[in-house]
Figure (tube, rainbow, N blue to C red):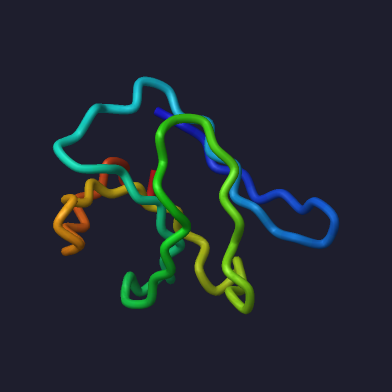
Length: 88
C-alpha cells in the first residue's frame, strides 16, 4: 500500500510517494501521471521506495489526477503492469 501527495516547494510541484512493501520486480518500477481516460500519460521517474518526484513542466495535475506505478522491463519497452488500482 502507499500514498501519493502533491506538494509545492519554491514554486515547483512534486509528487511525494510513501510506499510500503514495494515489490522487487524483474526490471524497475516507474511512476506515471495519467489522465482520467487513461489515454494520456507522463512519466515521473523510477521509484525505489519513498521518493519525491518533480511534476513535468506544463503538466496540470488536475488534468492528470491518477498516479500509477508500473513494472517496466530494462529493455526500454513499457509494459504498463499496474501495481495499484487507480480507482483505489
